[in-house]
Image (cartoon, one colour):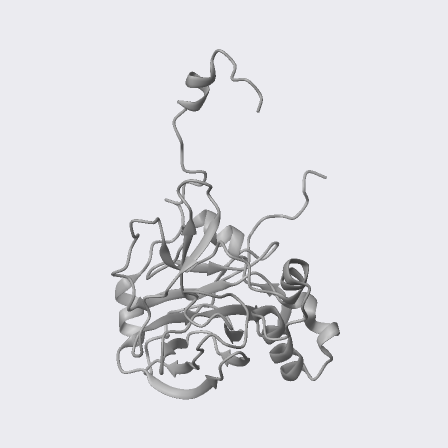
Length: 281
């Protein structure tokens, strides 16, 4: 260890500031989203089997809900612009604009250069959880996704049902292309229902048993036309293991809803960033 400089205490005493001042972002329009939810009608649904993934499409202005149906289970969510897979969910910027864990009123932002809201969380039955004594919260955007490459590096075993592989298979099936052709479109996720944080002593990423129970759900409003993919993590509720075939795992239910007529009369899909893209040249 390097010896401390004489002014170490004063350096450490610098006050933290929030990196982004987000007051200029459009506020969460709770009355609008509540109106959109009122009387909505289900138009489609997908049941994602354990240790697998499924895709679904959500038209702009519609809602989708991810529900626990049989047992405590976490899921890894990817989102794309339904017309352009190059525009996708940007977990890092979402984390910077909101927080490490998301809930009602937070938005899921797309990557550069579009940088626009893809979806807004309209309801979260686990919003009561907040932060526990370990520093854990629910629905994180800090973990990446379990993947077969890290698994092989750490264990020397090929495991094909990590969330990365599940999402890759699902996108390959949707596009009709081979997994190797679409794998690069799989991206960092919203860890739905997952309870995570950083240990207070070593600041390592941890997971613990998810508080989700059958009947719980998280719901989103699509701000643009969306293609989604959801993986049911092989870790189940993530209380013990990350990737294996022995942990109890359960399906997750995705439902797509259409608002009643008239709700979207004065609403427009989210627009891309207005930045000139000249980068100083």
